[in-house]
Length: 610
Ligand code: ADP
Ligand code: ZN
Image 1 (cartoon, protein in one colour):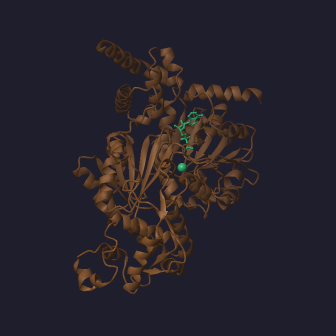
Image 2 (cartoon, rainbow, N blue to C red):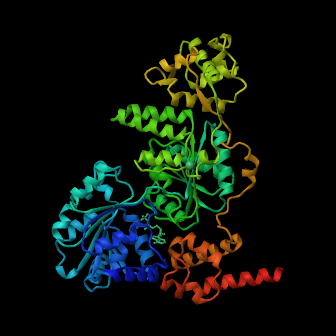
Image 3 (cartoon, helix red, strand yellow):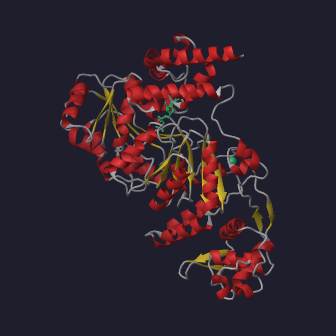
């Protein structure tokens, strides 16, 4: 099909303003255009939507998109319409009259993409006549079909009948993550045994990966505040372990003049919707959330993710950081991790139904937190992906840890444990090592043991970090059945008696060696080389104004990436504006005046100042 590619590229330019396909996009398009089934696994931001939207536009008739995320449907449809693509949705959030109008429009061949919930498709499809002319069936979030996936939805498990109802119509299943078993399940349950598999690397190279260890609550708050200041005006999510801590953190930030709100499952639906809407519309930059937040939003300009505590496994971590930087521009992920996190998560894992699996997953998460090699390498190898170089976009690559002989330090800690008959927990141990005068220490006579105060040269944070490493290295363990007291393992005894040496990674308060003051001053403004940050800000304001006036989220008007390109290329005419990256034909008509006049005025003012 030699001219299929030409046609596909023409549509890509006209409706999206892009000149080239991302890797695998065209292969998937070509495959389904030949009438074949496919399963496409691409990371968030990888461009899955185009894989079914372009065939929908190339074909006669209407493509059906099955999606479990009702809240997202409206956004997706709005975004398509704003690019001039006739799309519509049928779901329970609309009135039946509205749904009927939509289906009439599909019969009248006025809809190219129809978004529908799985339960609704199953209910309605037998009533539809063949005049409906379905060109393609896309199953979004296809992992929801599998018990093996992390997000099983019962309404997905009956979709196998769809293939019987529409024989000959290609089915395209899409998801961001599906391990081997989930893939098998998806093919089986959708009744598409011959579906070709398209897998794109899970890597999200634009997200920087950073971990800070062992900080106290107060130090953590201060680091979060620094981080937010450096990311001034950018949207971000802070994930917390509990509902309570989302509220406390949001409150503490507001007291410091930072606009942040909590979001968790215990809040009313109305309140949650309001907060979500403010976030999407760039009216609220920061959300402190439990894991419940993020699944239902499509916001492409989330610039950073903070994990206030370590997540319970790498799958959750990866999914959560993946919500940042969907527009492909630089984004940052920062995770805090302390002994307290490990203790809490470990006891959750112990009490969970599947303690073996969950403890193993938690251990892998902790290994990631303690990484002394490139973090991205660790992540991708966890997902069985080959990645054979250092990424240069994680804290380990940028500041390789200093390794030192930590044998003596470990011996200090373990000898204090021996002298208290291994009957103390983590905080008490640190108090003994640092020679604390707390009443609990004195009343138990811990101030009279030989190791009392031997570790006073190290701060509490340092001990926190080193004890974490000892835990990870298998020198000590937490005895959950015995009041969370710390115990020494056989390997720990070898070290204690000097039979084995251990290397530790040196602790730095901010994981950076000498850049502390520098990092404090430097505000990270996300502009690329040659882009004027002031102009970028002005264009953002223009975008906000348009979004407010037209009732769509700012990123639906233009993504951050398009504004960045605009601030770099500074188009002054309609023709220049129209050929720019990411500007669909219909958007040229609608917006060229507003944006080019901002640019022209700005340049004139700048020229005057000279
Ligand atoms: P996914 O559904 O896989 O998370 P999307 O389909 O939402 O990803 O695409 C992510 C972003 O990348 C969107 O802003 C989209 O417009 C953009 N995009 C997709 N394909 C291309 C392309 N070929 N060129 C440039 N940008 C693209
Ligand atoms: Zn790296």
